[in-house]
Length: 293
Image (cartoon, rainbow, N blue to C red; front, side, top):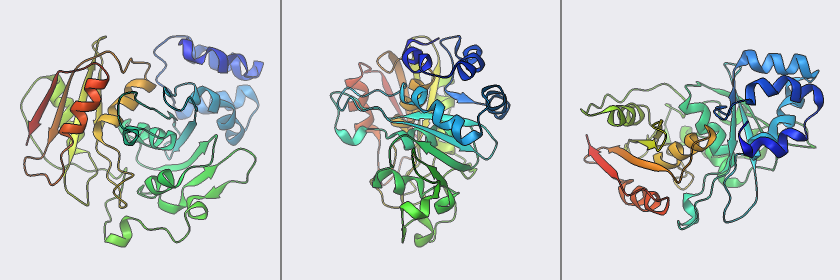
């Protein structure tokens, strides 16, 4: 079991801990549960799905990286597939706070990068901030997304974001988590191919500045990230943060990145290159290749 889960795991009920232990036994637990695994955990723990999600939140929060705030937030996104995806907040020392990933962004992006097509609900251990409410409004589930919070009745995102402004107000109807293929092409090694797939599935309907990245860790694993643009602009999530989020949740070390490839449009209105280079340097990686398509 990965060391970060020890404390949270020790506080679980005996029934849930016994059911969960085979999944957490190895360090490479990917921080998501298949629909079959969710059903098995619910049956063996005697919990319904809502109670189970709340019980698992401390494990999600244990994935947080918070060198600035030391405040751990966990989230679990539930997909229409029945799969569940962990999320946790991430902060990066030596970078501006704008590079932070919020727990809800983490869970949503985690689901998106693993191929989930739509979310039905998200469970969080603290009330979503306005930034996250706006970010979630970009989803194809929109204000119908159900938010579960401790000690409160479940409510739609629309309850927490009344009179919402979102993509539909700007006549955008291809939404975050919809399947897309932008058709870019590039030649290169495996890292380039991962980044190419990422840019082709990125979400940038406002600027058309599609971008994707791939990170290679010291252990040889590759983690892609896609740009997720937002109608309100500031809650947009850069591709690097999406990739770092996936790397962290998969048990990778964000301070052990050996190289990275960023792919952008040659004529893009926005560029991720400078911010990506600066954040990677703060994490100890100086090998960034930028490819224009």
